[in-house]
Length: 337
Image (cartoon, rainbow, N blue to C red; front, side, top):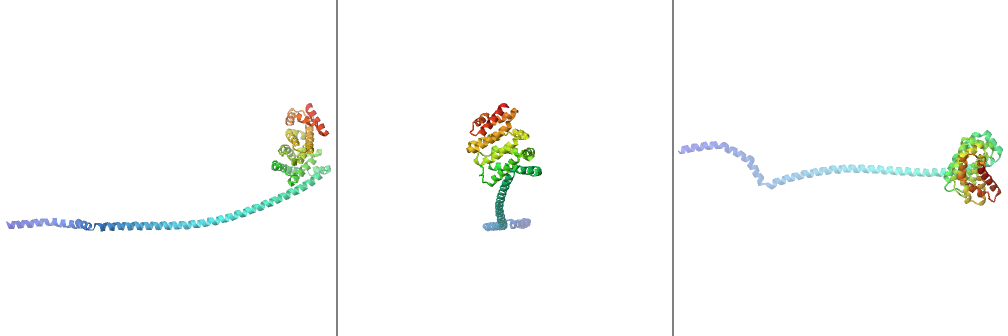
């Protein structure tokens, strides 16, 4: 019995041996590591956390190092660019200052040259004006230098327009060199148009016709000021001379010369008595010329609209006999037309 039991026990142990071996291996693979980990729970966690923190710190340090390096390069580049821009600004500022100084110098030079030219023009213009008072001089000009007279009329066209545009707001004193220059030019035209050949040339030359047109158009833009009277007298003299030419008379009517005459007659309200009378007489003489044997109703209507007959009738009673006589003739022409 005991032998049986022993035998059975051996067989049992033999059969259990693989199981025990397998169990032992499992204990080494799973139980022992877990036990080791359980016996040192904090240490394993600390090591993991420490290694993670060190990794993060190293990553952060590397990132900061890259950022700092990139920022340093950008700052260096910006400093260099700023330095270049500052140098450029200084260079451009210097160039601007130099250009401004040059501009001021050229302005002064231009003003000096302009004053010199105006003074020279005033002197030569007045000398030529005096020379043109002799009919034989004008005859020589017309027979020999017609091209030059045409160029002169082209020059006076632009000069007169610029003069009126510059001084229509405030007229310069009669001592002004530009004023003297303009007076000289108008005086020459007045003397040239005083002869039949001269006014024929003036009204048939394109530059001459343009100048007559500008006188009729621009004279009303001149201010009502005492300093303008001598200039207007010369203009009216030229218009009167032109009206003595048949072609010139028709041209003045087409240009509505009544506007210019009406404006000049208004001057007597601000002028001295003598100057006022001279303007009245010149305007009346032009009216006398343009209304003589006038038959076209549109021209008569235009003139009487700008200068009413009642206004002319008041001049019939002027103290000066020449003014009253011319006024009577104008009224007679208008009534007979």
